Structures are given as C-alpha cells and as structure tokens.
Image 1 (cartoon, one colour):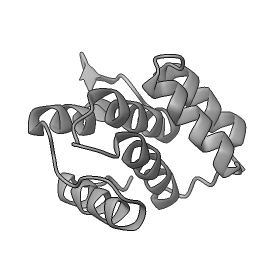
Image 2 (cartoon, helix red, strand yellow):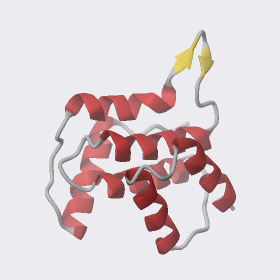
Image 3 (cartoon, rainbow, N blue to C red):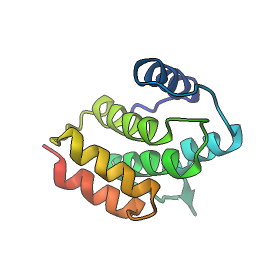
Length: 125
C-alpha cells in the first residue's frame, strides 16, 4: 500500500491553492497529523479501517472535518482521497459535480465517513 506523507499532503495543498485560489498554510499541525494518522489506526492489533477504500474515505473525511489548513480543506480532502486511491490502483467513475456535492455535504455535517466509504464503493470501476 502506498501512503501519502504529511509533506506530500502539504505540497498538494499548496499546489491546489495556487491553481484554484485561497490562502495557503497549515492552521493546526496537530489536527493535520490526526487526519493523516486516523486511516491507519488499529485496536488490539486489528485495523479500524482495513480496506484501501475505508482508509481513503477516512483520509478524505478527516482532512475536511479537522480543518487543519487555513483554506481549501474540502479541496485537499477530495484530492488526497482520489490520489491515495489512484496510487493504490483503485479507479473511480464520477462527475465533478458529484465529487463537489459529496465534499460539501461532509463539510456541512450531512455526510459521514461511512457514507463516503459507500460513495467510493458505488463509484469504483
């Protein structure tokens, strides 16, 4: 499994901000660490999120909800999730509107991490 490092996530965020606008920078380093560690948690030797799809959903969800960056948290959540899936050979078929709506719902508290996991499964090729 290929995992995105903290440095890679920060670089991806900077690139997104340059391309789409907004304010660059980490707002809370601890919340960023938490969002990046959560997909790989285990309890009594068992992974909490065992599949690549579950890990991807937790990564995307955590980056949005933890609000670790000054700006662009929904964008980096979606982008990091998609790149993590792509690096691990999982392809999705979706429209930009579907993706945007999904991540807006996460930010608004209308979509859970579990529902994001099912969204991934529903859109997997």
